Length: 175
Image (cartoon, rainbow, N blue to C red; front, side):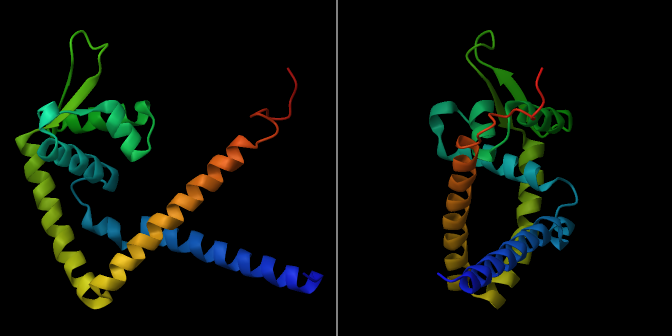
């Protein structure tokens, strides 16, 4: 590859990476937050996961273990605990533990939490119903599949970068 081709390739990658970063920023920041007035997006996702787990997994009697929730949401236990504590204080979740707590803590959704979740889902279904109608169901499914593939590649690349980090987390300053 010539130097000119390499420069063009690097410019294209730069432009594409900037555009992708910008689009993700807009999706995360944008008007979508207007749809979430009574809870945050992460809270909605957590409540939805907890409610779904309760419906689809009779083994745990509606329980969602904190470690499972943290893993699914890709959050630390500390971040998950803070969010769960906030939801518990608002009466949306019950937080309990098995035995003396060493076997794990779990959450279950309350009736109030279920009601708020259902209200939020009505708002989202109304909005996304119109979006899907305009954008097209098949195109949206294809886009979601591509986004999952892209997320897998991006996650793998970050993991690889972390694994090959040569300074081992050292900030360059000697003790």
